[in-house]
Image (cartoon, rainbow, N blue to C red):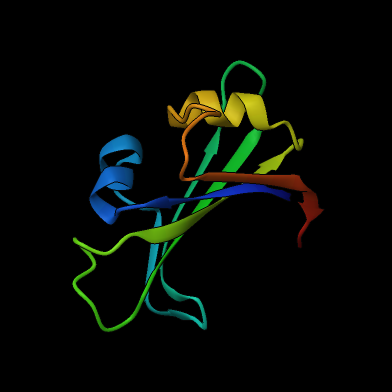
Length: 101
């Protein structure tokens, strides 16, 4: 998998777009509470992983978190299309693919 982008999002916004998370870790990592989704995109089978990190100690419904987008292969365009995110969205930050394990 490669990290391709991140964007600011609210918990309810991602739940509406992606459904119930496949995994929730209320303790989270050092980055905050984790909500995780994993998909295989059609028709290519590209793997997509979305990790939403929400800060501890606040009302997670009203505080934006950071969603990191990972994909394999590292092609961002199908990921943005599947997520319904426009490249012009000011909340989106893209970067060169970063391999992760």
